Length: 423
Ligand SMILES: Cc1ncc(COP(=O)(O)O)c(C=O)c1O
Image (cartoon, rainbow, N blue to C red; front, side, top):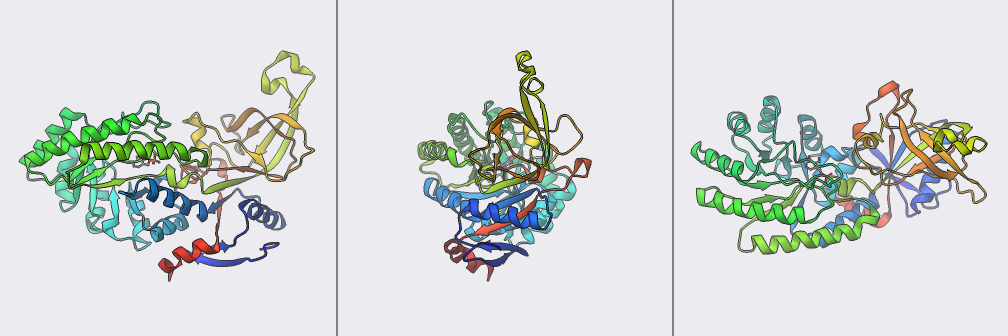
């Protein structure tokens, strides 16, 4: 790669990974340079495996007794999954496709949790064929299905645990309350079905950490009832919900502390294996999205800020090659917004009022509105940091717009650490 002193390449999951100790900003500039030369407008996603490894180490440090079952739905890129496997992570899958994807990476079936409480018959049969070790349920109908199509699996009962202030609350769709959970535990016993533990998911991007504490306390009560009924209750699955951004690390430490204290308070004396299904925590911050500005339109400022007095002022509309039908689909469902920044640093560029549109003809395709950015030109690259969670997996292809192309990097020290797994 041009201008990189110590460049070399390695291969992970059939993809070329740049092995370098150069800083990320320099790598991004080189990728842009090569794309410009090749007339490749992207969009591009740079997966920095060093950040993934940092996140893994932080988890191990803060939650040493909680096993990782990475939620594949969040980002199923094969290099990402291969690195997770190399680090020692296991996987949470939600569909046949996700099962096949992790199995194709030689992941043992003992490291796969089919964490979808309502499954199709064919998917259950597929899980049976692959001998997937655990699954989840929250209804009698599901118990009957599991008995019929995948009776050897361990079963985790999903209880209701919902932080309504979470970035994406999940409580309405899945999970039974305590009364319902007791009915299910009894029903399972009467029908000679196993229940091996309890699981919950407080919602993606949990804000109220006490939700974890309450859910762990509820799980403990159900462990006692399950054991009394004769079930081998041995797994507690605390789900996902952990924030992923670099600036949210102190929040993660605080949440980990809450969870550790809660586990100590409620599960001391139990022979319990604690697992979690983090997605966003791992996938968000390792990925930077590079979008190309393919069109710039000068407009009267009032079209953007709606201020009558600004009829004389001008503003800018940028059109970039990724939008809400691509990797910004979460703009429709979440209040959090990413803020693009120019790749090319230009201290002289004037701050300008602007709107950033996605590439499709839809007027909903709005990436940022009424924000200020340095003035940029058509053909420049705009960077969106921490765009790895629930992004490329939601790309729809609407208007025929292409998905982002992945690029990968790792430094020498980290490669030494995981390379054995690829030999
Ligand atoms: C069953 C299940 N597990 C794990 C996750 C991952 O959650 P998060 O990305 O918040 O960690 C989700 C997300 O929707 C989920 O539905």
